[in-house]
Length: 309
Image (cartoon, one colour):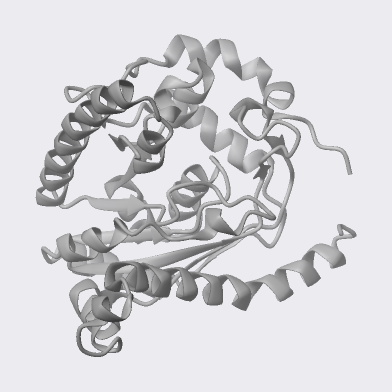
């Protein structure tokens, strides 16, 4: 089956997106918090709706309700979600608002995603796409590693430190407002044949220390796929109709989860060459994969019933 690129399928929206967009083109420590743009959000919602096939749904509504109740009671809430495409956050918010009832709408209004600088800085249309959703922008560690020239690396390291310190302050303020933080623990979109893109980032362990409760959100199916012939151009991503199932896990206590994993490693795991922080994140990725696998066989059967393979 042939798929159109995002550029080909939705170029008719680009003029309006450009007119409505107002987020910063360059990120520094003064503009890391970016409030959702309701104008571009409407366009994003229409794009999600265009490509959802019958059977698309949000599983674990009772878990969404429990998580929201915990957040409203004053607990600091963290959402850790699988990451396949730049459609993941738009889909999550759309599903909450259209399949999650009043509680879903309430939670959607509280979601702030941690996002890399590339979404703002790579392309004006990608920026307009991203700014439909509230974000706190960070300087990803993977981006810093790309600077190999010593002088350039030192300058970028100083820049990243300023940006990420400002991001942590913005995140603390968001938690005090009763908002929830959404993080992609892989830090990048999964790419078939590249298992390293499914590796959880060690830094996620620090989030578990900063939050009280969390849910894991798995994604089965996707309406936007990375173009294998042009993976670095986000506007070359391929648009596809699909049955999409998002699932929310039961609520977990962050500190108890972390404590349990570390306790299972025995005494002084570092002396055995074991990194407790990475092991904690590895367990999160394992649980996400188990949750994903739970729905995938049934979803593929539903697609086959629609005549789609």
